[in-house]
Length: 445
Image (cartoon, rainbow, N blue to C red):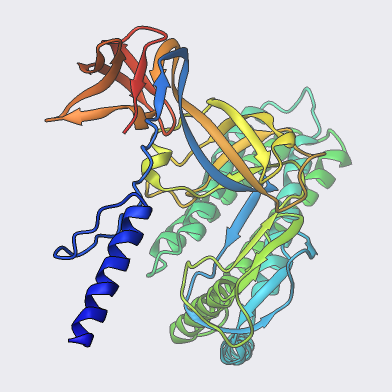
Protein backbone atom coordinates (compact mmCIF):
# COMPACT_ATOMS: atom_id res chain seq x y z
CA UNK A 1 0.00 0.00 0.00
CA UNK A 2 2.73 2.50 0.90
CA UNK A 3 4.51 1.67 -2.36
CA UNK A 4 1.45 2.61 -4.41
CA UNK A 5 1.08 5.86 -2.44
CA UNK A 6 4.67 6.86 -3.28
CA UNK A 7 4.10 6.13 -6.97
CA UNK A 8 0.93 8.27 -7.01
CA UNK A 9 2.80 11.11 -5.31
CA UNK A 10 5.59 10.98 -7.93
CA UNK A 11 3.03 11.17 -10.75
CA UNK A 12 1.45 14.24 -9.19
CA UNK A 13 4.81 15.95 -8.89
CA UNK A 14 5.53 15.35 -12.58
CA UNK A 15 2.12 16.73 -13.58
CA UNK A 16 2.62 19.84 -11.52
CA UNK A 17 6.06 20.42 -13.03
CA UNK A 18 4.67 20.15 -16.52
CA UNK A 19 1.90 22.59 -15.72
CA UNK A 20 4.43 25.01 -14.25
CA UNK A 21 6.26 25.03 -17.63
CA UNK A 22 3.05 25.71 -19.58
CA UNK A 23 3.06 22.36 -21.37
CA UNK A 24 0.66 19.49 -21.32
CA UNK A 25 2.18 16.07 -21.15
CA UNK A 26 0.26 13.02 -22.26
CA UNK A 27 1.92 10.15 -20.46
CA UNK A 28 0.24 7.76 -22.88
CA UNK A 29 1.97 9.31 -25.98
CA UNK A 30 5.75 9.41 -26.72
CA UNK A 31 7.33 12.87 -26.93
CA UNK A 32 8.75 14.05 -30.32
CA UNK A 33 12.01 15.90 -30.92
CA UNK A 34 11.63 18.87 -33.35
CA UNK A 35 14.15 19.16 -36.36
CA UNK A 36 15.47 22.52 -37.60
CA UNK A 37 13.84 23.76 -40.82
CA UNK A 38 16.21 24.50 -43.80
CA UNK A 39 16.22 28.17 -44.76
CA UNK A 40 14.68 29.04 -48.13
CA UNK A 41 17.27 29.14 -50.99
CA UNK A 42 17.40 32.45 -52.86
CA UNK A 43 16.72 32.13 -56.58
CA UNK A 44 19.54 33.28 -58.93
CA UNK A 45 18.31 35.75 -61.49
CA UNK A 46 19.90 37.16 -64.64
CA UNK A 47 19.17 40.32 -66.58
CA UNK A 48 19.02 40.38 -70.38
CA UNK A 49 21.86 42.66 -71.53
CA UNK A 50 23.03 44.17 -74.80
CA UNK A 51 26.62 43.74 -76.02
CA UNK A 52 28.93 41.65 -78.21
CA UNK A 53 28.97 37.86 -78.40
CA UNK A 54 32.33 36.57 -79.62
CA UNK A 55 33.25 32.94 -80.31
CA UNK A 56 36.96 32.45 -79.59
CA UNK A 57 39.31 29.64 -80.51
CA UNK A 58 41.90 29.52 -77.75
CA UNK A 59 45.11 27.50 -77.85
CA UNK A 60 48.78 27.74 -76.87
CA UNK A 61 52.05 27.70 -78.76
CA UNK A 62 55.71 28.44 -78.23
CA UNK A 63 57.74 31.54 -79.08
CA UNK A 64 60.26 29.97 -81.46
CA UNK A 65 62.28 30.85 -84.58
CA UNK A 66 60.10 31.29 -87.65
CA UNK A 67 62.55 29.63 -90.05
CA UNK A 68 63.35 26.11 -88.90
CA UNK A 69 63.74 22.66 -90.33
CA UNK A 70 62.99 19.24 -88.88
CA UNK A 71 65.69 16.75 -89.80
CA UNK A 72 65.49 12.99 -90.25
CA UNK A 73 67.58 10.16 -91.64
CA UNK A 74 66.62 8.64 -95.00
CA UNK A 75 67.30 5.06 -93.84
CA UNK A 76 66.88 2.97 -90.68
CA UNK A 77 69.91 2.64 -88.45
CA UNK A 78 71.59 2.82 -85.04
CA UNK A 79 73.00 6.16 -83.91
CA UNK A 80 76.79 6.09 -83.71
CA UNK A 81 77.33 9.64 -82.50
CA UNK A 82 75.41 12.88 -81.89
CA UNK A 83 77.77 15.82 -82.30
CA UNK A 84 75.58 18.73 -81.15
CA UNK A 85 73.29 19.70 -78.28
CA UNK A 86 70.28 21.98 -77.94
CA UNK A 87 71.34 25.60 -78.32
CA UNK A 88 74.54 24.90 -80.31
CA UNK A 89 75.26 27.13 -83.32
CA UNK A 90 75.72 25.15 -86.56
CA UNK A 91 76.72 25.95 -90.15
CA UNK A 92 75.29 24.70 -93.42
CA UNK A 93 76.66 21.25 -94.28
CA UNK A 94 77.96 20.55 -90.76
CA UNK A 95 77.57 16.93 -89.63
CA UNK A 96 75.13 16.81 -86.70
CA UNK A 97 74.80 13.05 -86.16
CA UNK A 98 75.46 9.79 -87.96
CA UNK A 99 74.64 6.09 -87.88
CA UNK A 100 77.05 3.23 -87.27
CA UNK A 101 78.54 3.16 -90.81
CA UNK A 102 81.96 1.62 -90.17
CA UNK A 103 81.07 -1.38 -92.34
CA UNK A 104 80.01 0.90 -95.20
CA UNK A 105 83.22 2.90 -94.88
CA UNK A 106 85.26 -0.29 -95.09
CA UNK A 107 83.31 -1.40 -98.17
CA UNK A 108 83.92 1.98 -99.80
CA UNK A 109 87.66 1.74 -99.20
CA UNK A 110 87.77 -1.79 -100.66
CA UNK A 111 85.81 -0.81 -103.76
CA UNK A 112 87.94 2.27 -104.34
CA UNK A 113 91.11 0.17 -104.13
CA UNK A 114 89.64 -2.32 -106.60
CA UNK A 115 88.80 0.51 -109.00
CA UNK A 116 92.35 1.85 -108.84
CA UNK A 117 93.71 -1.61 -109.66
CA UNK A 118 91.28 -2.02 -112.58
CA UNK A 119 92.25 1.36 -114.01
CA UNK A 120 95.92 0.49 -113.71
CA UNK A 121 95.35 -2.82 -115.50
CA UNK A 122 93.49 -0.97 -118.27
CA UNK A 123 96.52 1.26 -118.75
CA UNK A 124 94.70 4.50 -118.29
CA UNK A 125 92.20 6.38 -116.30
CA UNK A 126 90.24 9.56 -116.08
CA UNK A 127 93.43 11.64 -116.05
CA UNK A 128 94.66 10.18 -119.37
CA UNK A 129 91.25 10.84 -120.99
CA UNK A 130 91.23 14.44 -119.82
CA UNK A 131 94.80 14.93 -121.08
CA UNK A 132 93.91 13.53 -124.51
CA UNK A 133 90.80 15.71 -124.72
CA UNK A 134 92.81 18.84 -123.92
CA UNK A 135 95.48 17.89 -126.52
CA UNK A 136 92.84 17.42 -129.22
CA UNK A 137 91.24 20.76 -128.39
CA UNK A 138 94.61 22.54 -128.60
CA UNK A 139 95.43 20.88 -131.97
CA UNK A 140 92.05 21.82 -133.43
CA UNK A 141 92.37 25.39 -132.19
CA UNK A 142 95.88 25.73 -133.74
CA UNK A 143 94.61 24.41 -137.09
CA UNK A 144 91.64 26.80 -137.07
CA UNK A 145 93.85 29.80 -136.34
CA UNK A 146 96.25 28.82 -139.12
CA UNK A 147 93.38 28.49 -141.56
CA UNK A 148 92.00 31.87 -140.56
CA UNK A 149 95.40 33.47 -141.17
CA UNK A 150 95.92 31.99 -144.68
CA UNK A 151 97.87 34.41 -146.93
CA UNK A 152 95.84 36.13 -149.65
CA UNK A 153 97.16 36.77 -153.17
CA UNK A 154 95.66 38.10 -156.28
CA UNK A 155 97.09 35.14 -158.22
CA UNK A 156 95.29 32.47 -156.10
CA UNK A 157 92.72 31.66 -158.76
CA UNK A 158 91.75 28.37 -157.07
CA UNK A 159 91.21 29.80 -153.60
CA UNK A 160 87.47 29.07 -153.79
CA UNK A 161 88.17 25.38 -154.26
CA UNK A 162 90.34 25.38 -151.16
CA UNK A 163 87.55 27.02 -149.11
CA UNK A 164 85.02 24.45 -150.28
CA UNK A 165 87.37 21.60 -149.42
CA UNK A 166 87.95 23.05 -145.96
CA UNK A 167 84.18 23.37 -145.35
CA UNK A 168 83.81 19.72 -146.27
CA UNK A 169 86.66 18.89 -143.90
CA UNK A 170 84.89 20.69 -141.01
CA UNK A 171 81.74 18.69 -141.68
CA UNK A 172 83.75 15.47 -141.68
CA UNK A 173 85.41 16.45 -138.39
CA UNK A 174 81.99 17.15 -136.80
CA UNK A 175 80.70 13.77 -137.95
CA UNK A 176 83.77 12.04 -136.57
CA UNK A 177 83.42 13.71 -133.15
CA UNK A 178 79.74 12.71 -133.05
CA UNK A 179 80.66 9.12 -133.84
CA UNK A 180 83.24 9.11 -131.02
CA UNK A 181 80.67 10.44 -128.57
CA UNK A 182 78.08 7.81 -129.53
CA UNK A 183 80.33 4.94 -128.33
CA UNK A 184 78.80 2.52 -130.85
CA UNK A 185 79.43 -1.06 -129.61
CA UNK A 186 80.80 -2.40 -132.95
CA UNK A 187 82.84 0.68 -133.79
CA UNK A 188 81.61 0.77 -137.38
CA UNK A 189 80.24 4.30 -137.10
CA UNK A 190 83.58 5.58 -135.82
CA UNK A 191 85.48 3.77 -138.58
CA UNK A 192 83.24 5.09 -141.36
CA UNK A 193 83.42 8.62 -139.99
CA UNK A 194 87.19 8.36 -139.68
CA UNK A 195 87.57 7.16 -143.29
CA UNK A 196 85.41 10.05 -144.47
CA UNK A 197 87.59 12.42 -142.45
CA UNK A 198 90.74 11.12 -144.15
CA UNK A 199 89.13 11.54 -147.56
CA UNK A 200 88.15 15.09 -146.71
CA UNK A 201 91.69 15.86 -145.62
CA UNK A 202 93.07 14.43 -148.86
CA UNK A 203 90.64 16.64 -150.74
CA UNK A 204 91.91 19.66 -148.84
CA UNK A 205 95.45 18.65 -149.64
CA UNK A 206 94.63 18.36 -153.32
CA UNK A 207 92.88 21.72 -153.37
CA UNK A 208 95.74 23.37 -151.56
CA UNK A 209 98.21 21.75 -153.97
CA UNK A 210 96.25 23.19 -156.88
CA UNK A 211 96.26 26.52 -155.13
CA UNK A 212 100.02 26.32 -154.57
CA UNK A 213 100.69 25.42 -158.16
CA UNK A 214 98.54 28.26 -159.41
CA UNK A 215 100.37 30.60 -157.10
CA UNK A 216 103.84 29.50 -158.22
CA UNK A 217 106.24 32.33 -158.33
CA UNK A 218 104.40 34.29 -155.59
CA UNK A 219 107.19 33.57 -153.18
CA UNK A 220 108.25 31.52 -150.23
CA UNK A 221 105.34 32.76 -148.04
CA UNK A 222 102.74 30.43 -149.51
CA UNK A 223 105.08 27.47 -149.44
CA UNK A 224 105.86 27.97 -145.77
CA UNK A 225 102.15 28.36 -145.00
CA UNK A 226 101.31 25.09 -146.70
CA UNK A 227 103.93 23.26 -144.66
CA UNK A 228 102.57 24.66 -141.44
CA UNK A 229 99.04 23.74 -142.49
CA UNK A 230 100.02 20.12 -143.15
CA UNK A 231 101.76 19.88 -139.78
CA UNK A 232 98.67 21.28 -138.00
CA UNK A 233 96.40 18.77 -139.72
CA UNK A 234 98.70 15.90 -138.76
CA UNK A 235 98.67 17.11 -135.14
CA UNK A 236 94.85 16.97 -135.07
CA UNK A 237 94.88 13.42 -136.46
CA UNK A 238 97.41 12.29 -133.85
CA UNK A 239 95.41 13.89 -131.00
CA UNK A 240 92.21 12.19 -132.15
CA UNK A 241 93.91 8.81 -132.22
CA UNK A 242 95.31 9.35 -128.71
CA UNK A 243 91.84 10.26 -127.40
CA UNK A 244 90.29 7.18 -128.93
CA UNK A 245 92.94 4.98 -127.30
CA UNK A 246 92.36 6.67 -123.92
CA UNK A 247 88.59 6.14 -124.17
CA UNK A 248 89.06 2.49 -124.98
CA UNK A 249 91.44 2.19 -122.03
CA UNK A 250 93.76 -0.10 -123.88
CA UNK A 251 92.00 -3.07 -122.28
CA UNK A 252 89.32 -5.62 -122.99
CA UNK A 253 85.57 -5.13 -122.86
CA UNK A 254 85.53 -7.26 -119.71
CA UNK A 255 87.86 -4.81 -117.99
CA UNK A 256 85.67 -1.92 -119.08
CA UNK A 257 82.58 -3.62 -117.60
CA UNK A 258 84.49 -4.22 -114.37
CA UNK A 259 85.43 -0.55 -114.14
CA UNK A 260 81.84 0.53 -114.82
CA UNK A 261 80.42 -1.86 -112.21
CA UNK A 262 82.94 -0.72 -109.60
CA UNK A 263 82.03 2.92 -110.17
CA UNK A 264 78.31 2.13 -109.82
CA UNK A 265 78.94 0.26 -106.56
CA UNK A 266 81.08 3.08 -105.18
CA UNK A 267 78.31 5.57 -105.98
CA UNK A 268 75.76 3.33 -104.23
CA UNK A 269 77.87 3.07 -101.06
CA UNK A 270 78.52 6.81 -101.03
CA UNK A 271 74.78 7.50 -101.35
CA UNK A 272 74.01 5.16 -98.45
CA UNK A 273 76.66 6.84 -96.30
CA UNK A 274 75.13 10.23 -97.12
CA UNK A 275 71.66 8.98 -96.15
CA UNK A 276 73.10 7.70 -92.87
CA UNK A 277 74.58 11.10 -92.02
CA UNK A 278 72.58 14.05 -90.70
CA UNK A 279 73.82 17.47 -91.83
CA UNK A 280 72.54 20.98 -91.21
CA UNK A 281 70.73 22.55 -94.18
CA UNK A 282 71.25 26.12 -92.88
CA UNK A 283 73.41 28.33 -90.69
CA UNK A 284 71.46 28.44 -87.44
CA UNK A 285 70.90 27.04 -83.95
CA UNK A 286 69.92 23.57 -82.77
CA UNK A 287 66.42 23.88 -81.29
CA UNK A 288 65.70 20.28 -80.38
CA UNK A 289 67.52 16.93 -80.22
CA UNK A 290 65.55 13.74 -79.57
CA UNK A 291 68.20 11.04 -80.15
CA UNK A 292 71.18 9.71 -78.23
CA UNK A 293 74.10 7.43 -79.00
CA UNK A 294 72.93 3.85 -79.49
CA UNK A 295 69.29 4.70 -80.30
CA UNK A 296 67.61 2.71 -83.07
CA UNK A 297 65.98 5.20 -85.45
CA UNK A 298 63.48 4.63 -88.24
CA UNK A 299 63.78 6.40 -91.57
CA UNK A 300 62.05 9.77 -91.96
CA UNK A 301 61.25 10.15 -88.24
CA UNK A 302 62.17 13.66 -87.08
CA UNK A 303 65.14 13.49 -84.70
CA UNK A 304 66.45 17.07 -84.67
CA UNK A 305 65.28 20.63 -85.36
CA UNK A 306 67.49 23.53 -86.41
CA UNK A 307 66.43 27.12 -87.01
CA UNK A 308 67.55 30.69 -87.59
CA UNK A 309 67.29 32.57 -84.24
CA UNK A 310 65.46 35.60 -85.62
CA UNK A 311 62.74 36.41 -86.46
CA UNK A 312 60.50 34.46 -84.08
CA UNK A 313 56.80 33.67 -84.09
CA UNK A 314 54.24 31.58 -82.20
CA UNK A 315 54.33 27.96 -83.40
CA UNK A 316 51.40 25.81 -82.28
CA UNK A 317 50.34 22.23 -82.96
CA UNK A 318 46.56 21.98 -82.68
CA UNK A 319 44.02 19.38 -83.89
CA UNK A 320 43.25 19.52 -87.60
CA UNK A 321 39.55 20.11 -86.81
CA UNK A 322 40.50 23.39 -85.09
CA UNK A 323 42.98 24.30 -87.83
CA UNK A 324 40.19 24.06 -90.40
CA UNK A 325 38.32 26.83 -88.56
CA UNK A 326 41.25 29.23 -88.96
CA UNK A 327 42.36 31.15 -92.03
CA UNK A 328 45.55 33.01 -92.91
CA UNK A 329 45.29 36.69 -92.02
CA UNK A 330 42.89 36.22 -89.08
CA UNK A 331 43.58 38.80 -86.33
CA UNK A 332 43.58 37.89 -82.63
CA UNK A 333 45.36 38.47 -79.32
CA UNK A 334 48.50 36.79 -77.97
CA UNK A 335 50.07 36.99 -74.53
CA UNK A 336 52.65 35.14 -72.47
CA UNK A 337 50.85 32.51 -70.38
CA UNK A 338 49.55 33.88 -67.06
CA UNK A 339 50.75 37.38 -68.02
CA UNK A 340 47.76 39.22 -69.53
CA UNK A 341 49.68 42.50 -69.39
CA UNK A 342 51.82 41.24 -72.30
CA UNK A 343 48.84 40.98 -74.66
CA UNK A 344 49.50 42.17 -78.22
CA UNK A 345 47.66 41.90 -81.50
CA UNK A 346 48.72 38.88 -83.57
CA UNK A 347 47.87 37.37 -86.94
CA UNK A 348 47.58 33.85 -88.39
CA UNK A 349 50.44 33.66 -90.89
CA UNK A 350 50.30 30.04 -92.00
CA UNK A 351 48.20 26.92 -91.46
CA UNK A 352 48.64 23.38 -92.80
CA UNK A 353 46.95 22.97 -96.17
CA UNK A 354 45.90 19.41 -95.31
CA UNK A 355 46.43 16.60 -92.83
CA UNK A 356 49.05 15.17 -95.21
CA UNK A 357 51.39 18.18 -94.95
CA UNK A 358 54.82 17.36 -93.53
CA UNK A 359 54.63 20.50 -91.38
CA UNK A 360 51.44 20.38 -89.28
CA UNK A 361 52.24 23.49 -87.24
CA UNK A 362 50.12 26.65 -87.19
CA UNK A 363 52.19 29.85 -87.36
CA UNK A 364 51.11 33.08 -85.63
CA UNK A 365 52.98 36.33 -86.35
CA UNK A 366 53.33 38.76 -83.42
CA UNK A 367 55.69 41.45 -82.13
CA UNK A 368 56.72 40.01 -78.77
CA UNK A 369 60.51 40.25 -78.96
CA UNK A 370 60.67 42.44 -75.83
CA UNK A 371 57.91 40.55 -74.00
CA UNK A 372 58.62 36.83 -74.39
CA UNK A 373 61.73 34.77 -73.76
CA UNK A 374 62.76 32.19 -76.38
CA UNK A 375 60.64 29.08 -75.96
CA UNK A 376 58.00 30.82 -73.81
CA UNK A 377 54.45 29.42 -73.88
CA UNK A 378 52.09 31.87 -75.58
CA UNK A 379 48.30 31.95 -75.19
CA UNK A 380 46.44 32.69 -78.42
CA UNK A 381 42.81 33.82 -78.74
CA UNK A 382 41.38 34.00 -82.26
CA UNK A 383 37.82 35.31 -82.84
CA UNK A 384 35.94 32.96 -85.16
CA UNK A 385 32.51 34.66 -85.10
CA UNK A 386 31.27 37.97 -83.69
CA UNK A 387 27.75 39.31 -83.09
CA UNK A 388 27.90 43.01 -82.23
CA UNK A 389 25.31 44.93 -80.16
CA UNK A 390 22.96 41.99 -79.57
CA UNK A 391 20.92 40.76 -76.58
CA UNK A 392 22.55 38.02 -74.56
CA UNK A 393 22.24 35.86 -71.45
CA UNK A 394 24.67 33.49 -69.75
CA UNK A 395 24.17 29.80 -70.69
CA UNK A 396 23.03 28.93 -67.14
CA UNK A 397 19.94 31.13 -67.58
CA UNK A 398 18.59 29.11 -70.51
CA UNK A 399 16.55 25.91 -70.23
CA UNK A 400 15.32 23.44 -72.83
CA UNK A 401 12.12 21.49 -73.41
CA UNK A 402 11.93 18.93 -76.22
CA UNK A 403 14.81 20.65 -78.02
CA UNK A 404 13.22 24.12 -77.74
CA UNK A 405 15.09 26.71 -75.61
CA UNK A 406 13.07 28.70 -73.04
CA UNK A 407 13.53 30.81 -69.91
CA UNK A 408 11.57 31.42 -66.72
CA UNK A 409 10.71 35.09 -67.08
CA UNK A 410 10.12 36.89 -63.80
CA UNK A 411 6.80 38.86 -63.91
CA UNK A 412 4.62 40.60 -61.29
CA UNK A 413 2.29 37.59 -61.46
CA UNK A 414 5.18 35.19 -60.87
CA UNK A 415 7.56 33.12 -63.05
CA UNK A 416 6.36 32.55 -66.61
CA UNK A 417 7.80 30.11 -69.11
CA UNK A 418 8.82 31.93 -72.29
CA UNK A 419 10.19 30.25 -75.40
CA UNK A 420 13.06 32.06 -77.14
CA UNK A 421 15.21 31.89 -80.29
CA UNK A 422 18.96 31.81 -79.76
CA UNK A 423 21.89 32.52 -82.10
CA UNK A 424 25.63 32.35 -81.50
CA UNK A 425 26.60 30.38 -78.40
CA UNK A 426 29.89 30.69 -76.53
CA UNK A 427 31.15 29.48 -73.16
CA UNK A 428 29.92 32.58 -71.33
CA UNK A 429 27.29 34.22 -73.57
CA UNK A 430 24.31 33.14 -75.68
CA UNK A 431 22.85 35.45 -78.29
CA UNK A 432 19.07 36.07 -77.85
CA UNK A 433 17.51 36.53 -81.28
CA UNK A 434 13.86 36.86 -80.17
CA UNK A 435 11.49 36.31 -77.24
CA UNK A 436 13.04 38.73 -74.73
CA UNK A 437 13.71 42.43 -74.32
CA UNK A 438 16.71 44.24 -72.87
CA UNK A 439 16.33 44.48 -69.11
CA UNK A 440 14.10 41.41 -68.72
CA UNK A 441 14.92 39.34 -65.63
CA UNK A 442 14.96 35.54 -65.85
CA UNK A 443 15.41 32.86 -63.24
CA UNK A 444 18.46 30.62 -63.65
CA UNK A 445 18.69 26.85 -63.48
